[in-house]
Image (tube, rainbow, N blue to C red; front, top):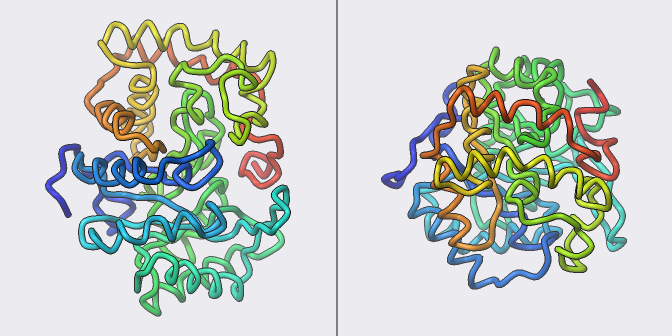
Length: 337
């Protein structure tokens, strides 16, 4: 691993040692408007130089394009990084189509395709991106365990599962990391999964720790603030009255940021990071960005320490947020709690 400028943490018992903040790479290929590919590649290099070593992608991002985008970076720094990717969400030529597959036959096919696109022989951390309740969890995790036995995958992860599902999976094969949405705006994961992860020694890898950018304070109305091809225009929290209500919730975040000489984003990331102490588990958030300047800002949040009083002021925000996390919550753990 590189000489990290940020602290390191271990994902799970015996899992990989990574920088305490990772990088979500989804937006480098789609969802958040047009991408400057050269700038995005520069951001990858800056991240590694800053001590970020966990790089997160999925086969669904750009329908494989994000994995292919990362391949040259991975090849240049294979021994310095921990590479995470995911399977389960299936897309088609219809831009609105989504399906979830967890069956063993699909898993075996999906991992081979990801290995090929990434240009690697082994994936460091392989997540089941979403859970299909119609497929027995033991069958899915059993198939993933076979990938470890075959040397195609080093460690296993799950995303958007309940505490009970995490325990069931962990009994089949050790789970290194649980990736779920967790931020000042999204507290669902605390219902059962956080406690189970702490109990089992599973690391939490929060995605969208900045509320898809809302917690930066940059948005008040998605219709005005976002590009036409930005998927957030269709997210409930970014639209209409919800957006205006949620923007008002950020007032204490801005006040605390000013007291620290920090940005709202840094306060939001520090809050997520400090959940490690609150809940007694390892937390490695993966904010996504395509810009080197934003990457440096995010990494600097690892040096922001909020007081108990500040944490208490921030605590009620999650209960007051307007709008669901997604237009369709059916594939999230929230509906199975």
